[in-house]
Image 1 (tube, rainbow, N blue to C red):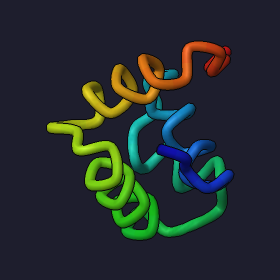
Image 2: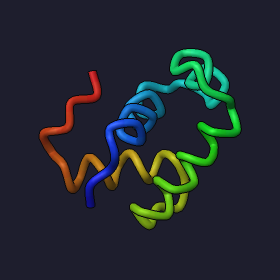
Image 3: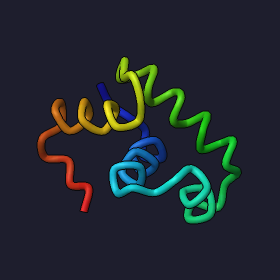
Image 4: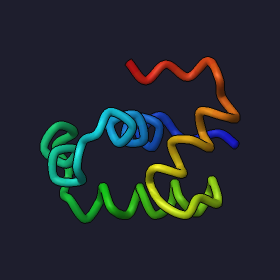
Length: 67
């Protein structure tokens, strides 16, 4: 399961504890766009929530560096 660079950027910020609003400000997009990306990420990873999405992506991509 591969994510686009933008979705991976958003998931990385989620993993770092950023809120949707903080992500939207940092990436200069609307909060609704961030939520749409997150919804698509959850669907693609078959995740229950954002925390589960981070855990699943890390499980399938152990070299993923979120720092």
